[in-house]
Image (cartoon, rainbow, N blue to C red; front, side):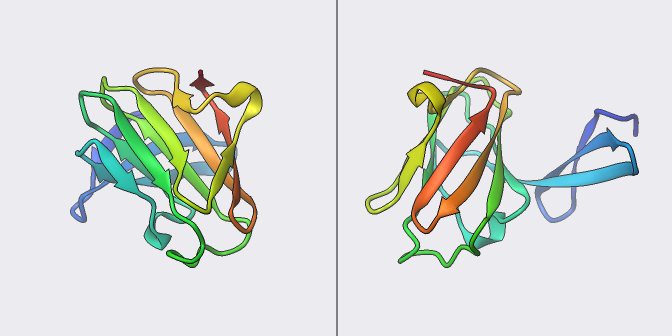
Length: 128
């Protein structure tokens, strides 16, 4: 497999191989085919790939619903043609520069960083 190509693993996760200074590092994505997905602790330090062809939303749950480790990072990939929107559920706040909460287009990526408790920062290839 060439650098920069993807594959689907036998667990249903999408693996993207990217060249890094220390060699190839697989970054696994939890594949989501629907238009709504709520993050879970299983998405920690990997990511979510949204493949839906229409607009779709990734919800960040409050800590009362999911026990995320402090300082959690979760990658989000808009693999499909439908625009991916990121939103906090009740009790959880997502912040971004310029109030940009949509991934910029197909193949755009963003990262959610848990800043503190129920406060998350979204950064990356995002737009309003």
